[in-house]
Image (cartoon, rainbow, N blue to C red):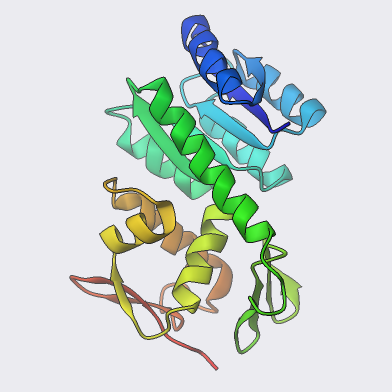
Length: 229
């Protein structure tokens, strides 16, 4: 059974989210603070973490940073409507997705299902036919593995999906809204989500992120992948 760790200091929120997730068939663990979250993440090894940023003690951003340093577990952040900067920082730390409070528990479950479905679908693809390569940058979607110059890249699930999509469409310009729809599966959303993920990818695959050769910015439009081979 798929395991989800829910981290929120509000008992009511935890209980409501737990009931909706269990109704959807997930096994749920609950934590009300950052220290408990990190302990549970280590002992239960969840398949996905729902993480509120406003936590007592160790805050959600630090929890996100520590989780990401240890694993590539998908992280869906819960943020208040006005916490745009914290949301951007969370994405920069490696969170995969976010939902703003107040939120619909049903929407949150759908978002969780979407993230997990993408990971599962990628994992069932045959590795050989789905190989995507550009010179020394090689992606194996079936194995969810990326290497650059023979070195394994540490990518979050969303970073990996974005890179696969861009590399599979070299020379094509996509707006941020295009990428939100095609990679995130959102009909609408915060375009800064795409900007942050592109920035993180450049830091990992470009020799000089300030002057990218692979992921080019098309000013006023969006992004284009240019083959480096």
